[in-house]
Amino acid sequence: MVSFGIALRFLRSNKVQTILIVLGIAVGVSVQVFVGSLVTSLQGSLVDAAVGSSSQVTISPDENNTVIEDWEPMVPSLEGISQINAISVSADSPSFLRDGSRTLSVLVRGLQFEKADNIYNLEEATYEGSWPTIPGEVLIGKELSETLAVGVGDDIQVTTPAGQNLTMVVSGLFDLNVRVINENWILTTLSYAQGIFGFGEAITSIETQVDDVFQADVVAQEVRELFADRPVEVTDWKAENAQLLSGLESQSFSSIIIQTFVLASVVIAIASILAIKVLQRSRQIGILKAMGITDRDASLIFIYEGTMLGALGATLGALLGLTLIWAFTTFTAQPDGTSVLSITAEPTFVILSAGIAILAAAVASAIPARKSSKLSPIEVIRNG
Image (cartoon, rainbow, N blue to C red; front, side, top):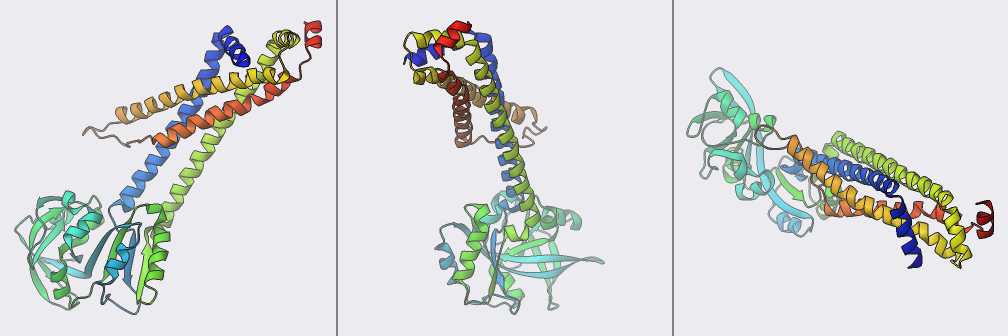
């Protein structure tokens, strides 16, 4: 405790220097917290936009088949995989939509809407009307409804690949915030799609979502092994979005580099300043040693100084980082009140950043601490 008391007195004796060191550490920690949280939130936003409301692991017929027969037993098997949290089956087929003299290519998808909602958030996306409940009713996208100039209750004319002309009634409109989907998807009940396309009881895909989207490839491999004896193919979003994944990995790497350099600058600054302090305090340390303080206690003075500086700077830096996040989210608000990018500060990451800064400060103080332990009281007093 003697060393701690002396370290505290040294810090108080030069308040300006102490404040500057603490502010330096705080700025470094705040940058680390802000940049790390920004990159993590940006990644989450990109992933959510790309695959958050879509299938992350998909089971389709292999190249020798067009449908999946006897699919019902597969669903309970998928439910047994702990990481899968949503399962939806569909019966899809490209078709043609006739609008006067125009013919549009569309994708008619038969769904079990209650289960599909767990993947596509259809309840939230349906902004007018309701889901199809009877044969012949369909849900169409916002852009498609604008192109056709049709609304709820209107008829559309669809031609199946087999040449069957069907009149379908629009029961509702959806907006999944993806233009391609809104322009091309026509959603109907699973049984109706199976009937008009001649699938019988078969389906064309089983779509799933997983707890951790970055583990989708691992889950996909588990699904492949589970259904190795079936004529199906299993794909995951990571394989289908290699370019996006590469971009996310580059972001993470850039964030690590920035945080590493920030941390290195903090360590160097603390080590340099405390090393200078050893020279400044050499006479006092020499007198203390002459009075009986041990080399170990002399070293501990600077270890305590570094640790206290790190703790103060890390705490202030964490608060400053959270303030920067709040300011960014608040002052980049769009006219509708939503932020351009909502940054979320994970408590674990903030605490870890502060902890690393404290540890770095303690490690940085080891160099001047070792130097102070080697001071000879006789030489110091004689030269002083």
